[in-house]
Image (tube, rainbow over the protein chains, first blue to last red):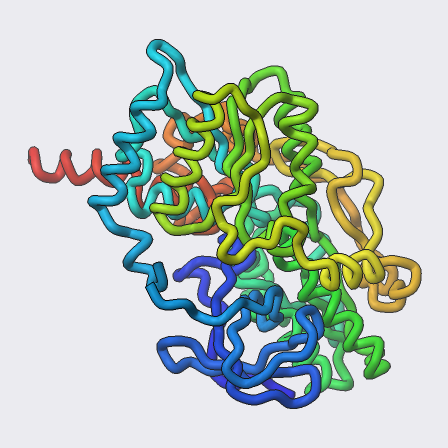
Length: 78
Length: 375
């Protein structure tokens, strides 16, 4: 399973490991231990989900280096 | 709050700044170290220090992984990459880190095949696409990144890949904090703890800091208001005579971290007895190596490495900057011989390194601007 053209390594924008950068993505579909996800700008990528357990479309993940670190709760208003 | 802009509201920042000022004890100076390179970047990019009273000094810590990688490990990576049939992969910032024999970029120019990847999983994909080549991932990073490497190694083992290995330089956050606290040349009052590292290891792991050293630590998010609120929480602890671990970043950080990620890391890695940190020297139990169970994916066992210890350039004062003893602009070569375009020291390489962040966003840029206006 390969990633789509979502996040790429671009040191000019900051290195994901040096900046301790993680992003919140929303699951659109699931295939085995990978989930297809999308961010608010419409960028898509496949994410490994072994570290967070079963996920479903619509759920939000905290993702670092194409690996989900946390399953986040639903968005709350206000 | 839901959107990033709401964490950058200048009126709220001013209000928090006033509340922080009101908690300062007259005549007292507070030194607060932000551990994480991402925090350093935010502080300079958004001028967070400008919202704090003069009594509070933010000190930049060792939380940028490429800033603390010793030159000898860069040379070892180049030695691997120069072998016939090898593809070395690494994160983007590693490409420009100077070693004793130049950087990965320069090794590429000499003919080595070193490729930038966004994830260790991308390195695994390259290995599958190149079954006749040995693909090595130069693994680097704190506990945020370690689980992604562990997961990649487990997938390589599951798929029985024999052309993939990892040159492991993963480091852990607690040992350097203890080394800094035990150093005689820096007296700190509190820590702003790392955000996404703590999604993995949690907050409980820092409780030794208030217990053994009497210092508060507040785990913080990465937006300007996150950092100001963390400073407020620290000052609130001082004003109430408390020293505790608190979690400002509770919207993403569970207090006990991610147990599944920790278990996978424990399975794949073991602690190295010692690891050399640039500027901090050799720190016991501060880095990881592959466990015996996954030894076949260990590049240090697969390839013979020089393993040389290379001294930093004499002019470079990254060590003092990493310990917070010197400010970036106090280094002898800052902004002259050492710039982001031509770094001598690692702190000038990554945009999260204290020197590069200060060079790009900080006082140095403002001074340059003033000079241009005067001319």
